[in-house]
Amino acid sequence: MREAPSTVSLVGTLEPLRRSRVGSEVGGLIVEMPVRQGDPVAAGQPLCRLNPDIVSLRLKEGAARLAALTAVHQELLAGTREEELRRLNALLLEAEARVARWKFEKDRVEKLYSGSEAGSVREVYDAAAEHDMALQRRNAAAAAHDEAVKGPRAETIARAAQDVAEQRAVVDRLQRELEKMTIKAPFAGTIVARRVEVGEWLSEGGQVVEVVDLESVLVRVDAPESAVGQVRVGDASTVFVDALKRGFDGKVRHVIPQVNEQARTFPVEIEVPNGEGALAAGMFARVTMLCGAPKQVVCVPKDAVLMRDGVNYVALVAPGEQGALMGIPLAVTTGASVEDRIAITSDNLAAGTKVIVRGNERVFMPMPVEVVDANGTPVKVEFPAAPGRPASTDASRPGEPAKGAGP
Image (cartoon, rainbow, N blue to C red; front, side, top):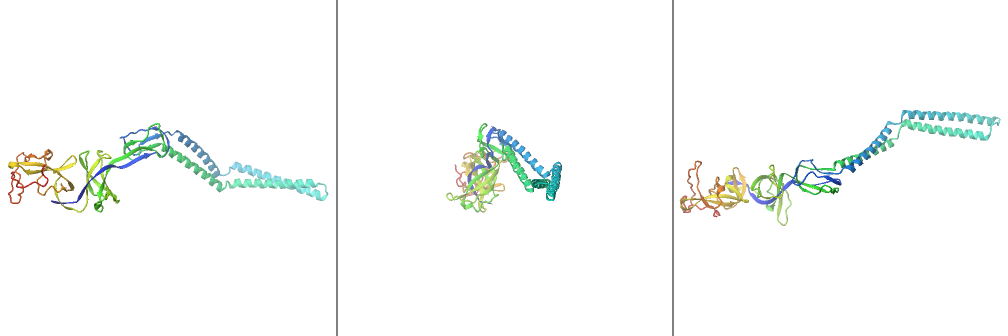
């Protein structure tokens, strides 16, 4: 008898650690599908390629327009050229000369007309009008010159900058769209489904392949409601896969606190490393996980337990007829490991029962056995005495085997 943690045995199904139905962010014609079902893929490996011709042309068009808008913005930032300033200054000087000329002419005509009445009213009017027009031309030339000196308005430069930013965003979007024409694996894994083929039109958001990550697997089981407060993340668990006829060590990864009202169970996921790649999604598994406080249970050496067709067996040694020894296979339910031993949670094996730890794989049914030492010399086996009887190895049933030890 040993103190061992309480356990519960459950059945579940293996699921991949991650599963992704990879879709496309853009639409297009499929021109290449380099992967098929069963192929391993690395993170970032191309899975599907779409025809990039139209997007490439649109990207070139957008890049050209961006260059043109950038040039306009740079021109505004640079201000007026020196040559333009000289030209406008010359026009301003010309306009001022015209003003001076027509002012002189106006004054002359007005003086003639007021003094000797040699001039006419029309001459006075025409000179005054020409002088006024010369003033307006001078003002226009001065305004153009001042505007050129000050350069473009801040609002004009800001608008040009926004035009550049808008077009740059268009180019970035087209560049990203072009990159998305190659659909890549989101993580390392294995292709389990291929949804499209070369020549098909893939719509935006359409599924391409299904990828699973089997570096580790999750075994999902439904634990009894009574254990909801006793299962902890990180608890060690044993997972036996019938298809492989072997067990694996795992740990509780997720405890989902949502009880099924009909079954009164709650989901628990146990993570099992899959470095060998032997485990596959969908396999049936039997899980033994910790559940509750430790208690005294019968424990046997780990070498005493055999697995056959998903059932654990222990081979007992019991007295037979005329002093012979009998090997008897007994189906048991195992629990937690306790150092080099394993707990037997079924009630059909009593403490003190003799069990075989070497050669037990040859005991398939009740059969005579012989116990020998390392040199092959027979060894006498003593059995505990039953009440009122002496200890013996003969067939007089001095000590009965554990309950349920018969064939």
